[in-house]
Image 1 (tube, rainbow, N blue to C red):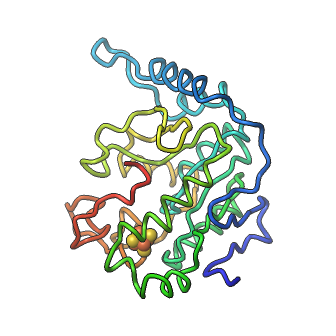
Image 2: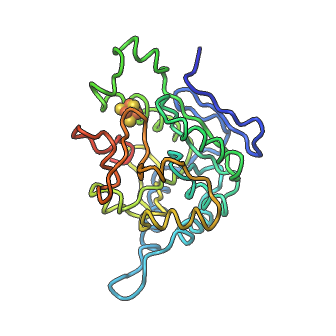
Length: 269
Ligand code: SF4
C-alpha cells in the first residue's frame, strides 16, 4: 500500500518508525493499572501546582519533566509533537533521552513540517514515530469524496488525527503535549498534569505557562529546530489546507480552520 508520506531518517542518529493506524511498534512494559496512574496524576498535580496565593509559584517545565522522570520509565512515555517547533521534545530528551515522539502524519502537512520532523530526528535524541491514519488521502477521497476537510473538518480530523493518536497512545502510561494557555481561550485552564480519561493515561503539559516568546527564546538558546513557517506568519501550524497565516495582533490560532466555527482538532478537548 502506498503511503502519502514516509519517514526519511536513514542518516539520523535516532531511529524512526512508521505506525499504520496509530499502532506504535516499540515494545514496552505493561502499563500500571488505571487507578494507580490516576492517583499518580493527582499527586503530581498537587505537588507541582504550588500555592501562588501564598507566594509559592507553580512548577517550571524542568520541575515537571523531572517529576515525570522520577515516576515513569522513559519507555512508558510519549511526546506528541506537531513539528511546529521541537522545544518540548528537546526539553524532555534532556531527562528522558531516546523518548518516543509521536508525529501525526495526516498526509496534509506543509513540506516545511516534514522537513522539521527530519531535522528533529537528526539533531535531537528522540525516537520519531510517524503515526499514520488507517487510510491514505487517496483512499479517504475514494470513500468520502475529495477534500473531506473542506466539507466536514470534524470527520477529517477524527479520522486522521484523533483516532490514530488514541490508538498510538495505547501501551504508554503518560504523554507530554506542548499545549500552552496563551494559545487560545479554549486552552486558558490547561493544567500541568491531569489524568486523560479519554485516552486512559496521564497527560502532562510542561509548557502550559509559556508564551510564544518563551518558546522562541528556548529554541534559540538551545539551537532547537523550528518550523520556518513560524517566521512567516504562522504561529500555529496544522495541516496545509486548514492553516493560513495570521495578522499582527490576531489570536495565534486564528489561522486554523479560518472561516469555520471549528477551533480545535479534538486532540485536547
Ligand atoms: S486539520 Fe484539516 S486536513 Fe488536517 S486532519 Fe483536520 S480537517 Fe483534515
